[in-house]
Image (cartoon, rainbow, N blue to C red; front, side):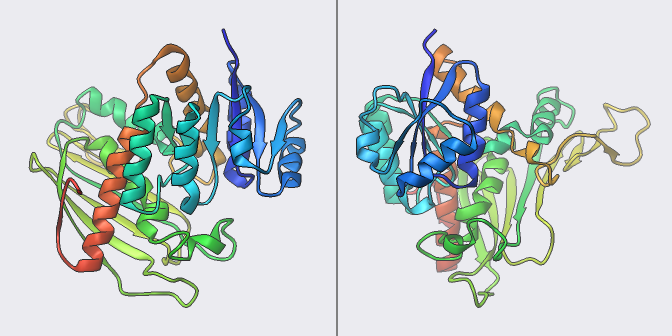
Length: 340
């Protein structure tokens, strides 16, 4: 079986997690690292004790490397679109860190390039493999909650000088909105548990703009599905609190509030929520990111053709909902989907 060569594009924190995960998989190996300063690429290779790794400062040159099968894009949000299109044009499989792009037009251009190239993709919504999410999906599949009719997901994360990406996240050019830069995880969570077609979104911002931010950092969005079910997404970079990621599921047989379950038809005599001892998205433990499981999923998809549950087409819809939410908050009007 061919060993898949991996190019790591970028040398920030998340690139290290991708290096570690790809090196753990028996069918992949990091063969190239790209950074604007080639010395940073060399330092990253040394940090992870990588051998026989080509280090580049020129992305176009790196894409000609015949030892690269997969490009992992771990760069600031504003360059994801152009780098993805180049990787697709070069025939490389692609892992793209979220969010996909800064505009809907760029997102559509990425899709056109990927569709034309026919390459495999995965987008970095790593919470698909979080133990709490996995447990929730199993209980739903078993029918323990019945039919869901309302779901909530919240991404509440104070972003300040201690946050690694603070410098560009707080800008319109680099972050644009809390929903796009981080809250997209909550939108993706909503879509995992309520996968139906979304008809309309309505969103509002708090009006608060911090002195160090270029945009309002708090947004609330209501989501209406075509089948009549509903959802809510909260996203904030402003709140004074530890990182919180809430997922609340309400069905006609039971409900879950994060890692607590109330399902009286399933648990005879239950009269209060019971806690399920699983790792949650806001556990504080790096294992909640589950990068090895994410990377294994992509490698299996490439080698075996295993269906990928978080490929570009899935993230494309998530991205559409995010842009619709920001547009609704900007205009003060509901926004119908799909976007043109």
